[in-house]
Length: 111
Image (cartoon, rainbow, N blue to C red):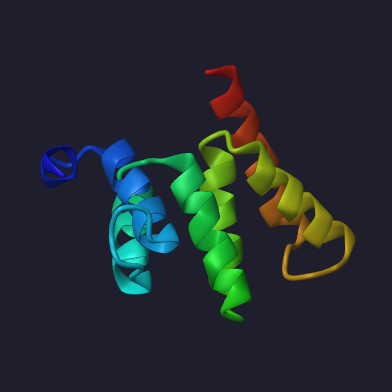
């Protein structure tokens, strides 16, 4: 769309869903991820969170945690909840990382 061509992050996020679902366009995982990455890079918290989920499903847990940390720092509640659950389960999230994520998340929520 024109908005995406102009760098609108919401447009990129919506296009990622359209390509992922095949809604009005042919399903295309490459284009789905491409637009989701552009939205995430532009600062879209849900796009960043979803990239973490994508990485987790593709067995890239370290990358997933990095995406969720960034999304948590942008105020995404789902991401901080996942990081907390992973910490409690002893999976990839150490205390210092969790503490930093909690501080960043709270700052974003308070802003």
